[in-house]
Length: 366
Image (tube, helix red, strand yellow):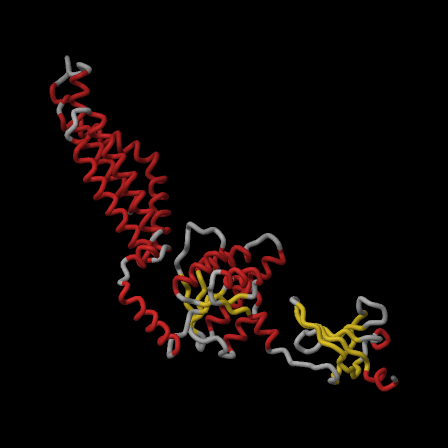
């Protein structure tokens, strides 16, 4: 439909130009001599111009339609505030261009009075549109009344202390990890779970990867999202907005969290540090997993199955139910057996917790 409308528009333009200029061109080239007078009629020129423009429109109408659809998609995906402030900036720029070009229209120089106003409209309209689009946060803070800023801070503190529950914004890594679905089902996360559209696009891109491992991880992430969405006790919201001026997904997550006052949920160590540096609240499920691990102290007894050799000589390796590794001294001889051990020391590292122990039988022998 839009293609036909554009073609009709260009046909009307061609007819108008033909009506005005083709008779003048024929008169200038003396093409009217020896031919009937109706050929040089403005209406004949209108038909000629419309037909010529109709044929020319077939060459560029598809490209123009694609450009318009691409622009429409960007406008739809952009947040409403960005579009609003961009439109206000565009109108402001066009108004300034109109005021500036008024003196030039009265000048006798033909090129200056016709070409310069067009340049001013395009340049100032684009410039102020970008100012309104990219500086909306500063413009919003500029129009806030200073006398009300303290009251708003107090109201925000009161709302946070009473019934306000921040949005939980999921990143790609925490979705692929899979544990977030079980955490949501246990109701440890309250409020609305936000899945940004750009995170969903990255997840879909991973699921379409040619690498088998990446493809399986991406598909598992999509399965986790479907599992969360089907659980009616979990409120999930898809954020449609995007930030075209930012390429990195992590940077988009941080900006989104700042704008909506949300909390980033991740298990990405680097994103965790970036959020902390930019004063953005973050929940790391690895920290949660470490926090809920059972506490063991030196001298306690545990029952462990020794699975394999350790790095050092005569060491054996076992694991607790939560995945914590236990290094059993002199445990090499007990590989494949379940034995009682006595904890000798506990080491907490950045990679997790490591427990050192020795067989209880050896302890008794000593």
